[in-house]
Image (tube, rainbow, N blue to C red; front, side, top):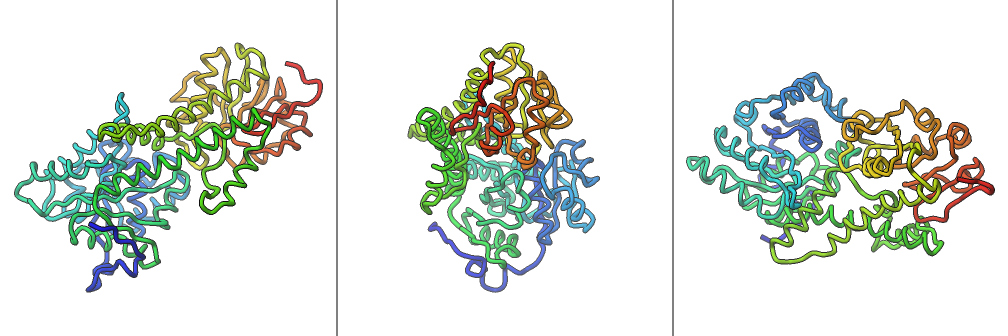
Length: 465
C-alpha cells in the first residue's frame, strides 16, 4: 500500500464516517503509554476501559490517582472518571467485552541479548482473542519490532477461527514525551496508522476524528512501516544527543563552546536546534531499549547497523566524562561526599529508569564516594533503584557538607539556585554542570569552581583541592 499523507479534512471517509461519534475502547496496560491513552481518548468523548493485572494499581486509578507523575494527568484522570467515560478493571474479559478497538500498551523490555521481549504482547493478544465477542481491531501502541503485527494476527486466527476475518491488527505507534505526554496525546503533530484494510483505516479515522477535525496530520500506510518508524524516530533523536555529546568532548579538548556550536547548527533549518543539548546523555525507558531492539532487529534481518552501537557507546562516555571532571577537581573520590541535583532521567517526570543520574551515582559509589541526591519528584523511585543513595529534602540540605554538586537533570528550579548560598553550605566549592544550566560568569562571581559540559571550566584563583 502506498503512503497516504494528509490532514484530517483530506482523510475523512466519504459518508461522514469520521463524525459517527463515540467508540467503545479497551486499553490493555496502564503504564505511561496506556494511562495517557486512556485519559486522552476519554477526553475525546470515547467510552474507555483501562485494564491491568496489577490490582493495587487498578485500585489507585479508580480513586483518581496516577501511579506515576505526569503533568496534568491526575486532573485529567479524575475529570474523565467523573464524566463516566473512563473506568478501570483487572478483569480482561470485562474490559474487552463489546469493545470496538483494543489497544495493547504493555511493556516490551529488552532481553539479555538486546531483543525486545514480546511475551506480554503475545499474552495480551491471546487473552483478547479468547474474550472477543465480535468484530474488533487490536491496535499495537507499544513499540515493537517490524513483523510483530503479523505474529499477533496469527495468534488471533489460531485462538478464534470462528472470528476469522473479523479480528484485525492495526499499528498506531505512540510519539509521547514523558513530562509532556498528555499534551502530546491531545495535540499531536502527526498520527501514524498502519492497516491492511479499508475497515481498519476507517475505524482509526473515526477514533481520532476530533484531532483530525482540528487539522492534525494523518499518515496512513502499510503495517511494517509504522513498526519501523517508531524505532527509527527514537534512534534518530538518540543519535543527535550522542552527536552533540561527542562534540562536547571535542570542545573540552580544543577550548570551544558546545552551546555556541549547537546554536550555529540549530540555525540551519536542515538540522534544527532540538536535541542538541550536551549533557549526561539520554536515559529513560524508551531510548536505551529501543536502540538495542532496533540494532538486534537489523542484525537478524541481515544488516549490521553499526551506527546504532556507536550511538550507545558515545552515550555511555558522557558518564565517564562527568566522573573524570570530579576526579580532576577532587583528586581522589574515596570518602568524598557528592550531591546529585536531579535524579529523574529528565524534568517533568518521576521516572528513574535508565537515568543518567543514577548511572553516575552507581559509578561514584563504586569509586568509594558517598552520594546524596535531590529531585522535586523522583526521590522515592531513585532510592528504591539505588539503595546506597541518600535523599535530601531540598537542594541546599542535600549539598550541605558536600565536596561538590553535579547537575544531572535540568529541572527549572535549579536555575533559580542562590549560588552564593550554595557555596556557603558546601565543604568544597565545586559544581559539575551536566546540563549547562548556569552562566559561567555568575558561577565565578559566587566563588565556585565550575565544570560545565563542552565549555571551558571556571576555577577561582587560589582554589586548592
